[in-house]
Amino acid sequence: MASREKLSTLEPGMSKEQVVKVLGQPDSSRLRNGESCLMYSMWRDFWNRRPGDYSDRYFACFSNNKLTSYGRVGDDF
Image (cartoon, rainbow, N blue to C red; front, side, top):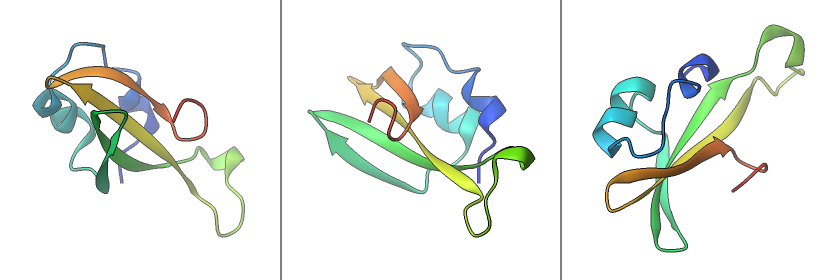
């Protein structure tokens, strides 16, 4: 499971390989509007955890192997 702090180091235009190097292997992947998206589960900070719910889902989407969008599922995805 990746940490949310690493997400802040992502920049548009990064390659898929660079993103995987920063965040690690994704939990899953899917297609969205013609883009390839990597899906990650990331731990919430201690004060935002609820019993049985300790992580959030995040995405990183690519077009032509370049990072175009990323964030928390539900905010933009």
